[in-house]
Image 1: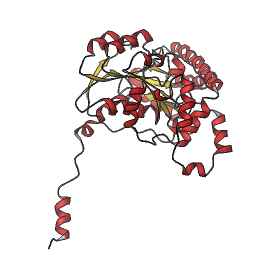
Image 2 (image 1 turned 90 degrees about the horizontal axis):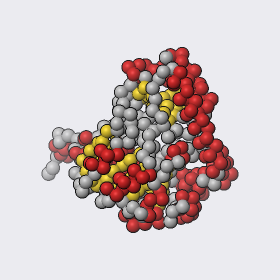
Image 3 (image 1 turned 45 degrees about the vertical axis):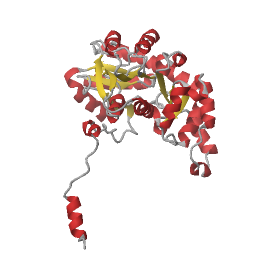
Image 4 (image 1 turned 180 degrees about the vertical axis):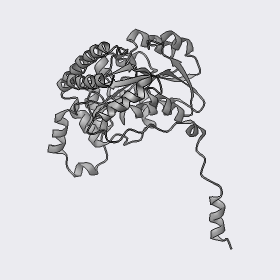
Amino acid sequence: MLNPDSEITQHSALGPLAPREAILDIQPHEKTPNGRRNKLRMDLNENTVGAPPHVLDFFRRYLTAADLTIYPDYDHALEELSLHFSVDIDELTLTNGTEEAIQLVANTYVDEGEEVLLLCPSYAAYRFYSQLAGARIHEIDYSPGFEFPLEKLLDRIGPPTRALFIGNPNNPTGTVIDTPAIERVLSKAADTAVLIDEAYYEFSGITALPLIARHPNLFVSRTFSKAYGLAALRCGCLFSTAENMAHIRKAQSPYSVNSLAVMAARIAIKDPKFIEDYVLEVLAARELLYVGLERLNIPYIKSRANFVLFQVGARCLEIHDRLRDRGILVRDCSHDIAGHLRLTLGTRDQVERFLDELKQIW
């Protein structure tokens, strides 16, 4: 008769289960700092003034207990969003923020050991989901002035390239690739899944979305986490041809976007003036920041997004921490770009407060 104690000893001696090789190579996610609620949040590119008031008003007036018992239904949302974005209903899918859009492209088109091209520096999620898929990653560096390395990228694209992820505007630099250059990339990468991540589209005004009809290798993502102020709810959209979307949806959990996020997105698009006013305020704040940084002789990269990358050199961590102690959160980008911080833009008053505090410690 088997002794249960000896069996337990035998199993425990084997040690923990070994994960996939790709998991061993992935660095743990950088933890979002605690205690951000009561500080000036200029670190994660969120909307700094709040979600559209009519979204909260709708929840207060119409959300019922019964609504929370029902699995999400996306039909009405897809109809309304397809009209809002001027695409066919079968050319988009709702996603759990931009991150799920990236994950879906990687999961659908990249097999273990296949090549993915990334720009460097760029949004960390591109690397994370490519690594998770077991891809071979090749990075193409931005130039010293952070101009888009178009010719280097075109030279590197080839038959082995399965996916290419491009942020436009790019995070953390805020720089862009224009539409003619995007078309050159799409033509060279005809057999490659190319995702243009337009998380900051509302601030740049540059979009590849109309190109999906001509380029069947193109995917475009948008999010409600930035200008729309709905980061807590995690809602975005992924666009491509109907044929591509049919494959993408096979790789997606049937209920990955929650009902509250869907409701909020549907309501938010009905008040374009809120977004227009907020974007105009951010653009004015960006110009104010440029003037303030120039007066302090602090180099910066001109941005087309709601954030600006600037150089403070060896004092990077010190300035980051001292600003935090003064209630202002900024992003330390020194792990990717030595000596640089990134500032999320909000209102002119918020930028003035930041500049006043910076002057005192600079």
